[in-house]
Image 1 (cartoon, rainbow, N blue to C red):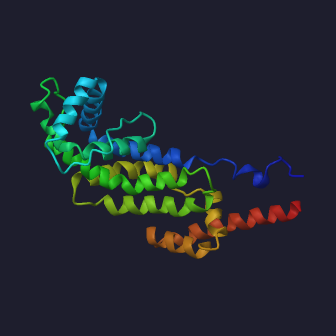
Image 2: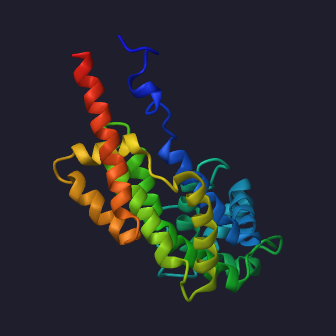
Image 3: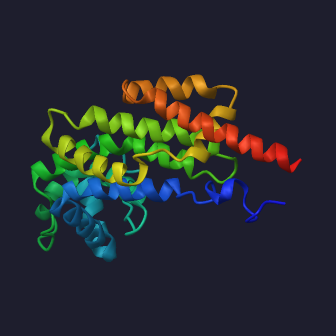
Length: 241
C-alpha cells in the first residue's frame, strides 16, 4: 500500500491538456491579425445573414471563373482556434469576390484592405501545421500519449525557426506564440514523455536527438531528468507487485 495512495507521491497526476495549451498559444498569435480578423468575421456574417445578400454574393462569384464555389463560407466560434483557421481557409479563396462585392451590393462596407488580406493569407499558411498537430493530439479514437513529445517538439522547433523570419507578420506572430509556449511548455511534461520512450519507434534516442536540436547545451540534463523519473516510477511499480 502506498503511503499517500498515489504512486511517486502523485507527481505525475497533474497533466495539462495539450490541445488547450496549443489553443492558448495560437490564440495569442492570432492577435497579429487585429482588425482584419474582425472585418473578415463581419463580412461572413453579413453575407450569410440574409438570403438576398447571399444571392448577390453568388452573383459576384460568377464573375470569377477560377473560384471553386463547391465549399462555402464558414464562421468561427470564439473558443477553439482551429475554427478560426478553417474560417480563414474558407474565406481566402473568395478574396476577390469580397473585394468586388460592393459593386453589386452597395450596403457591403466591411471588406478588409488589400494588405489585410495579404496578412491573413500569410498567417493561414503559417498556421496549417499547427492545425494538423491539433487534429492529431485531439483524436478520440486512439491513444495519443506516445505522440505528445514529438508534437510539442515540432511546435517549439517551428516557432524557433520563425522568430527571426524576414516577414514582419510571421516574426511578430512567432514571438507572441513563443512567449506563451515558454509559459506552459518551457519544460515538457515528464510523464507524457514516457509515452515516447515506451514507443519502440522512438525510445530515448529520439528524445536525445530532439533535445539536442533545440538546445545543444542542456539536452543531456533534460534526458537524464526524464530517464531518472522513469526509473523511479518503475521502481515503485516493482514494489507494488
